[in-house]
Image (tube, rainbow, N blue to C red; front, side):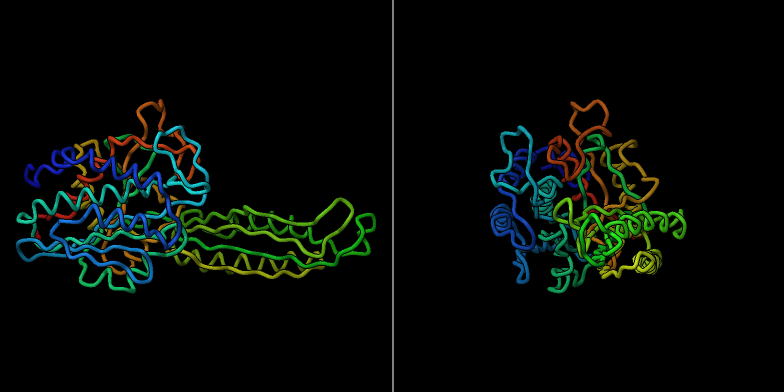
Length: 397
């Protein structure tokens, strides 16, 4: 293999193995914290490398340490391994073989790229100063697998961290990130509005929770636009509403739930107050009561400024001067890599994998789409960026 000054060249030498592993994982998606087949595939791919490998206890994670030839920092590289509970509707010859499960968020690619980086770095360990830790994490899709791994010591001794997320709406050969907030914190909202049931022909003898529910949902949208700073924004979406059973019965209750996204903990606290007051006040105005539950999910994912600058420099040297884009604003998705960046300086970035057949990346099926596909040529770039981030040093370092 060539030396580590040419990570992109090295990555192309092993890309066939990376693609083969990605396709194998893609065929057999697993959910949540229990990804035993994926774990075994990772362990088999790492077998024989000079790594200190540990299996997780609380989940089917893998942590593998590579010791370099000389002293230096410990750099953590992370990939998630779990899939989504949804159907895949692509015509790929390696399409999911499991009904109701699909790697529509690209975690199969993340895992394969990190295995590729481990192989590259292990082959050139004599050129590494410090230690590289490879973190293969299940349960990103809502199960906080990163937090469980942290509790088991995944961040012990780590000086900085890096993670990539593929983007099917960004061209191959490009990557993007930003300092500060990159991804939102999320809070779920669940509400049961309670009235008094009755006959639909005589609503005056009942207390209809459906108009109250409609008014609450509308009022919540207004509350966000009137009470939340537009420069520290929040998004509130009610995505599930259930009420009634037939045409001539006013139900006793109505139910709705949704999600709140924000990019600062200050706004998260503020919107909790606004939502609570609005839900209960509008329900009372309609003669109803409301049971409200707000559950905070992942924190805001913050990119350390120094690590974001490191990534920008790595992109320029690895992908070329046009290879890096600074995102103008955070995205409102959530990520449990946020638990990592709460504790150590880190950066997450997006890697372009838009299929070349798409005339406009913006029109390509996005993440979590049943038709999401990616250009596997981009995986070599992902391997190269992992390798470069693990070995990069600023001049003053």
